Length: 74
Image 1 (cartoon, rainbow, N blue to C red):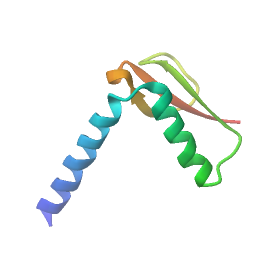
Image 2 (image 1 turned 90 degrees about the vertical axis):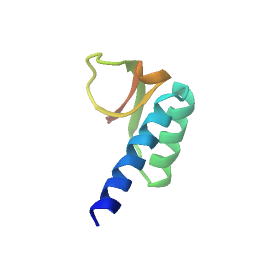
Image 3 (image 1 turned 135 degrees about the vertical axis):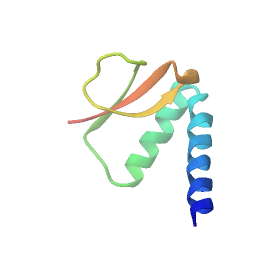
């Protein structure tokens, strides 16, 4: 069981590393499509420099981790 949990953890880290290398607009479109498929409305996604003060939740990183995609409700 411990090996299974470790494997899942490593796979999730690897997936995050792959997503970090994507162009920002491509990743932003993918996130928007997932939110729309779940019926979420009234939101915005904004690409900001990593560490920049932003009101919202970071939902992705792009351009090798240099930028973040921030989700804002409203």
